[in-house]
Image (tube, rainbow over all chains, first blue to last red; front, top):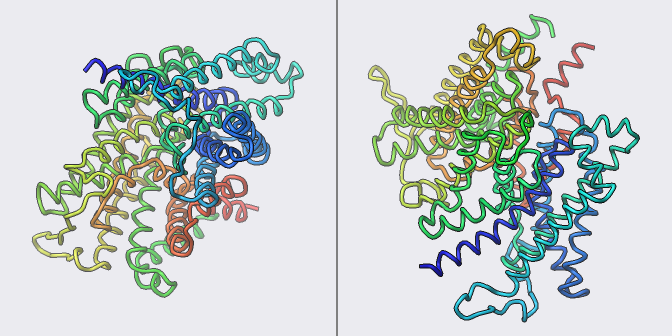
Length: 289
Length: 316
């Protein structure tokens, strides 16, 4: 029993790390540009499949390094061409556009790489369990958690220490003033979008190693990411991170006791948060509008 | 558009609706497709009560649509072989769910409101998906059929006659849009417009914003769940896809495609969308790309929809 609980909590932690990685990207874009990027799951799948195609040429590590950057580059182009004209208009339009984009991305992945699931090979020494008693502790899983932690840490350093990061944070608070101070807001939004998509691509490559490849790999992750943002608090990136991990673990724990509710439980959590603390755990007051 | 032209257009629309089963075949469609246009039109117009006339974006209406669908299906399968009771249960269940969830979310605005409605919609998706023994899970709810309507003084066999079912659906549609039109003309409806135009000013005038938003949400969802019951009856079947988030997105695009600032716009949008989807999915496996492209082109080039476009032409 104890092992079962440990197993599921650890599983939940991993899933939560994915939610957090997805949700952080979504949150970055939402906070600065007011766009809910429905296509985020599509970008995740794109990252995974790009890595799959690159691997024969540059190996596991090369693909892990390069595929997220390629995904981000595609994101930059799409933002420039399709999403930029919609800033300042009713958020309805960007939502519909990214929604259509999600359809197109999923269909394109299916068209290019096929509808069947594909295996994603990982290095043998990473795939082995680390101990016989805790069989679920494979090297790859630990590696994933470590890498997500590293990525999130780097993201927060970028946001705190670099000029770009400070501008993103300032723009989140007051974009008009940032623009008046001479920052090119268009470029800022573009780079910020790319940063968000990079995180989606990275999550995609990591997820592929654990789950294999499927065109719908991102679709099942996007809704929990919304929940993570709402639970963690609108406008707060640390909140989003915590929200993701929290709902991941809650979902894992529910699997032990009541498996069929493991998906629904996170929405119940969201309902409770909205009832008791509408701005979320770390949300700022007045950010609801 | 002048008053007279507007009236003429409305009459024309009703004539087209009343004769649809006859000309639908002539243009290559079939009776069920006509019914689907009317049912989806009702769902899109119900959504537009909230979106176009209250100015609040819900991206989760498929949940209530689907609750209606499952409500009628489950009632017919397990409780009573009566179409009327089934529809009543479906609409009551959808409205109740909307009332509960609406109370949680009326404090949110804009994109956040949209995001929370999407997320909550998923709860019902997972319930129908996971509760195999009752709902049939991913395979959908089968083993039931719509029953003939018995009014006591008359009997309408909607079970075996597709055309009879079309007119039944059209009657439900007419009653619903009539009710919505009346509501929008009432002081309550005018208040919703005031909230859409300027929420802060409306609040200063002493209007209870949250209560109005909640009511508008519940009314909108009630009609959406009615559309859901009709959808399940039309297919004699329902599955979790009826309440997944992509269905919600389809409702929104129908409303925007037709023109969300006009009363009839969503019906036009639903007509275009349903016929297009039917045509494309019979021709190519890549219908998702085509539908996605419709979304993208619509947003970039025709944000005001078909009727919005006609109106600008008429005004200039």
